[in-house]
Each structure stands twice: as C-alpha cells, then as structure tokens.
Length: 251
Image 1 (cartoon, one colour):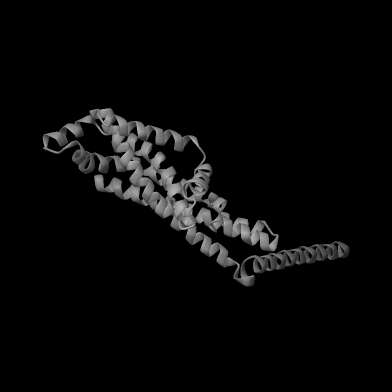
Image 2 (tube, rainbow, N blue to C red):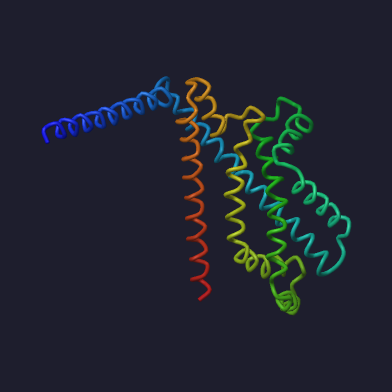
C-alpha cells in the first residue's frame, strides 16, 4: 500500500508538471505571437480592413442585385428591356461561373492597372460585383414569389410598373429573401479572405504575417478562425432577430 501510494503521488506530480509545462508553453507562444512587438495589431488592423471591404461590397451588391433583378423580372412579366436583360444574363452567367479570386485578379491586374486606384477599392468593387450577381437571383426569386395580383393592384391604384415594384413588390420580396440575404452577407465576409492575393493586409493576411514572423502556424491561424467565427455568429444572431421582428410586425 505504501508503494502504491508513492506511485500515485509520483503520477500526480508528473501530471501537475505536465499541465504547468503546457500552460507555460501556451503563455510563451501567446506572448511571441500577439504581445511581442504589438503583433496583435496585424489582426486588429486586418479585421478593420475585412469589415470595411465586406460592408462596402454588400452595399454595391445590393444595389446591383436589385437593379438586375428588376430588369429581369420586368422583362419576364411585362416584356421589353430585351437588350438590358441580355446584358444582365451575361453578367450573372460570367460572375457565377468564375471564381471570385480570378475576378479579383482580373480587376487588379487588367482593369485597374493605375496605382492611383487603391487595392481596397479594387477589392470592394470585385466582391461587390460578385455579390451582386448572386443577390440578383435572390431578389429575382423573391419578386417572382409575389402573387401577380399585387402588380394588378398597383396598376389599379394608378402606379406605374416601376412604382409598383418599388412601393409594393420589393418590400414584400425583401421579407421573403431575408434569410438568403443574411447567408450571402456571411459568405461575402468569408470570401474576403482571398483579398491577400492583391497584397491587402486583411484579417487572414494579418494572421499569415504573424505566422511568417514567428514560424508558428497554430496560434495566429486559430485566432483568425475564431475572429471569423465571432463575426459570422454575430451576423447570424442579427439576422435571426430581424426575422423575428419582421414576423411579429406582420401579426
């Protein structure tokens, strides 16, 4: 029994020492990756750039998507706008059929070759144009889901097709497609992680810079993943709350 007791104490001491060594290593890695030389600022500044690109790009995407959807649904329901409808179809087909990183590189190396145009501006345009193509189909499905009697009601009130679309159809379509819009915004935030291809120091690139300085991949990249997870979780929570409020307003 005495021997077994000593063995138990030794095992407990070894386990305790192992925990201490692990915690000490974790603390050293944390200091080297984030505290030393204020390297945490790479993540903080990158996070700001990521949010800036995503917010501005989604605004462009919503505008492009809404206009494209209105052209296509107007053509389908009322006829006309054949030329504009053809342009919209080519735009949607090209953007949805090619990777966003290729579109980003085309804009940066071919379209905007002037150094006067900032890299962030190029990224905003690239992600905004890309998002617009997907949002166009989302808006289009929402508009087409509205009963045709709504259009007739607008006409009976003396509204033009554009006025009916803006005042009656789009508000209802927005409620129908809100979950899809939230998912698109979440996807857009994650897609901006390829902005480093044109040397933008976004969140992902910030983590990669720290990895290059410390030769430690786990901690900086895991921190980047956690930050993206936090952003997505907040967005998902906000979309859920907005959906709930819209449902309550309909009662």
